[in-house]
Every structure is written in C-alpha cells, then in structure tokens.
Image (cartoon, rainbow, N blue to C red; front, side, top):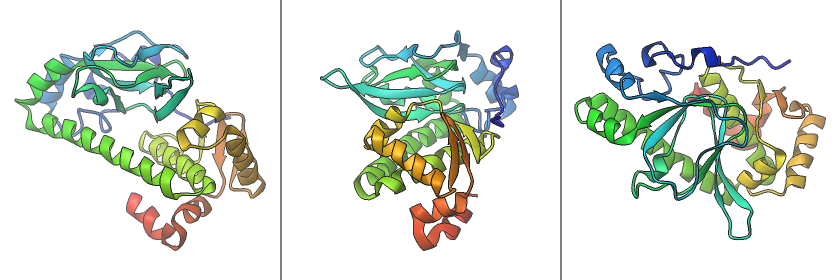
Length: 252
C-alpha cells in the first residue's frame, strides 16, 4: 500500500492560515493579518476530475491557480494533434504564471486525477501585493522558480543520458513529495509512461525498459503507477556521480 497523505476535499475550503500547504504557497512568510487579506481574495473552485481542463492554451488569463490536492499536467498541443508535456504539478504549486505577460495562457493544464485548486484573481493579487512587500517578494520567488525549472529542463534534455533523465525525474518527485510531508521513497505517479517519456524526450519503450532495468538492479520497485525507491543513494550517484553526498546535503 502507498503511504501517502491525502488532502481531504472536506478540508479544501479551510482558510489560508490553516492550510497545510501554507509554507509552500503564497502565504509563506506573511504576517497573520496579511494572510487574512490574501485569503479574502482567494476563491475555491469545484474539484476537477481526471481529464478535466483547468485552462486551455489561448484562454484569457484571470487567475493564478494553486493546487491544493491531486496533480496537474501542463502541455502545449502540436500541429499534428499530439502534445508536448511541459510539466507535472503537485499540491502547493502555482500554475498560470506563463500568462502574466500577455494575459492569455500559452499552454493547457489538465487534471491527472481528482484535483482541487484555489483561484487567486491576478488583478486583485497585484493590487494587494503593492501594499504587502512580502507578498510581492513571494510572487517574484515563484517567477524565479519557474525560470530556474525551465533552465534545469534544458540541461536535462540537452546533456543527460536516458538513465540520468529518469533518475532525475524520480528524485525530483521524491524531494517534492517530501516537502509536502509525504513519503520520499514510496509514492504514486499519476501520469502515464507515455507522458513521462514525452516530458523527458524519451520513447515510451525506453521509459518502460528503464523502469524494468532499475527494478532488476534493485533501485526501485514499481507496480503500475506505485513506485518505491529502494536505493535513493545510488540514484543520486547516477545523476551526480562522486558529488552525490554533497548534493544530497545541499538539498536538506
């Protein structure tokens, strides 16, 4: 069985100050009174089910969305009807930052499982942040993180082998789940092998073969979408070589 905490849908309407994701989201570092002001503009939408779109490419931009439970895939459609996966997003992460410049979304976002989000109307957020410097700093931090993620992806796709790409992908999820209070070594991947391959620039056959090889080498155990990392140190070594210990310490 997967040892995962799940944010109950009975609790998704809690105020920002009581939300378990506050340390990952916009309220991080805000004074209690400022959190109350932020909570005043937040809207809690209905749950999205697997396959439901939160927004589509070219939709008019109104709000940033914070995932409170579940997971979301962002992608851009290709001319031939296929898609290019841009990212997978977990609770506490913000989507929609791409649309700030032109007030239209440049990608689509679809739920990978039953998912809840908080809508934060951007015009109200922008107005509020002008009077709360720490909130403005949080927005800058989110934008910086988005740019950093894009840089990491370019490095991943340009320089790393297929084995390193999959190991990096698994370690990324391990670290992100750990930050949310979930298990770092026992988790559920809501996306398909095809979507993982699309994201990593690998054929789905290569992804399946690597999962089988990693399991044979006792790096992990996988059963469908349930993954158990059995030797996280070796995965770090695969990605970072002799600097794996130093890299792990820097991430703690």
